[in-house]
Length: 314
Image 1: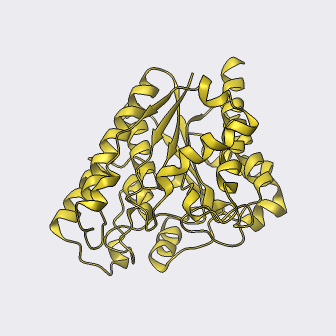
Image 2: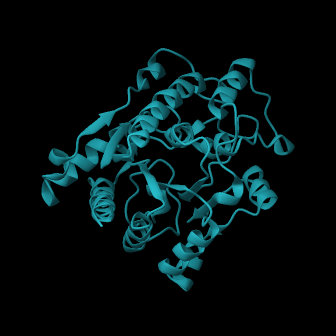
């Protein structure tokens, strides 16, 4: 069974509005598939977006203590769903939530090997020691690979930030870098580039996807992750070109076309190793085309959930 999980924390982002991404998709569904959200029960993870009205953000790790708490809640939901033999599909606010998703998979299957396909304009490999902004949505993969990237450090985070960061990384590494693949990354900073080079992490660019074809890229990923037991797919809508919509916090030119994103997600969802998926960073407050991003994201969600469901019936 596919279990939708709503994790609408947006305190890891630098802009407001991604907590409304689920509502944007629900609104979009009314004109194309109004039955979708009636048929799908959504487990909601408690968020604390109101902390932005109570506390000042910490330097080098904005609201990181609350985000560490969010990790705990998300991981608990994901672990419970996966331990029951079901497939969690998360709809999250900002991309910091994804670190909690990865933690939950690891908690459910601590002795299994995890692969991660990160479809995004950014690598999200920063840490409090390297982030120029302190926005934690740029850090989730660093928690998964447990690398502070101290060789590239430019910051001296406070003890409180470091303590929360260590909580987020957990007691053991959840993801080996040889089982990580990027698709669509085209905006990085020097500390992230250093990690990409250090670990030789593949980035399947938009140009390579168009040259080789989506099927070839998916095949490369399958070969890379052939020894993985579970694969998690994280889809940040900023992986798509802004011509689809600017309804996301950090749009970058030169991204995937909607059709390319659809083909990629359907091919990955049909792969029997994919056991958890996530859509993130849908921000209707930044959309200059009405609800275009909500409509695009829901179309992809509808197709992807159907593909997962068809796979489970085979």
